[in-house]
Image 1 (cartoon, one colour):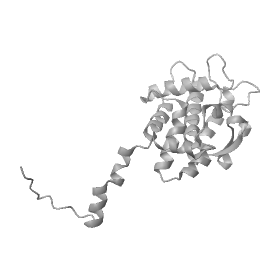
Image 2 (image 1 turned 90 degrees about the vertical axis):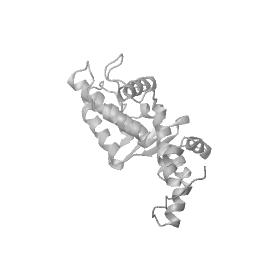
Image 3 (image 1 turned 180 degrees about the horizontal axis):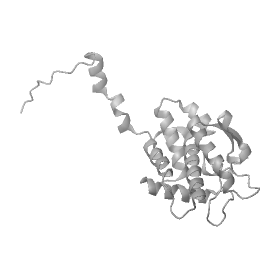
Image 4 (image 1 turned 30 degrees about the vertical axis):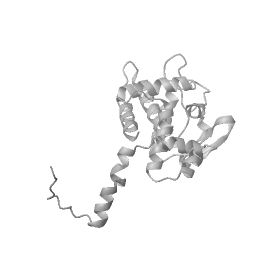
Length: 212
């Protein structure tokens, strides 16, 4: 997933054909901010779309999300995501409809300047994925990919559960099945560990003959 996120962020830097200069800048800044927040904050599509300007606290690196059942919780994000969010806030006034409080809004389409919907978000992510060469992809893939990335980095399942706002840790364990064993094999290879331990990293004598 990190490679896919990187590719999609890179695609956000490419001009969008058929848009004015102002709209093009807004689309690219908005998309980069959404991708970063989806991945960094493990947000669901509906949570992202329901965010308002007052929910965002960039200085404190957090936002207040409305989760399942109307539950409200703070979600943390890193400085890199904050930078992309700030970029979007700088261009948002030029494309938002008067009185619209949603953080993320549509640029063009049937409801320009109005709150972005979950279905609209899915279309944006799918098309951006196609441009980045990582199709098919959905908003939920970022939540799943974030879980795997954190577990691979050494985070505990309990930590991921709290930050992902799951009631049951079993949900996290289900996502942990997505861990890429092939990518981690070099770290856990029994023979590699044996050689590094027994021979202190020295190469093993390869002058061995095999009975034929």
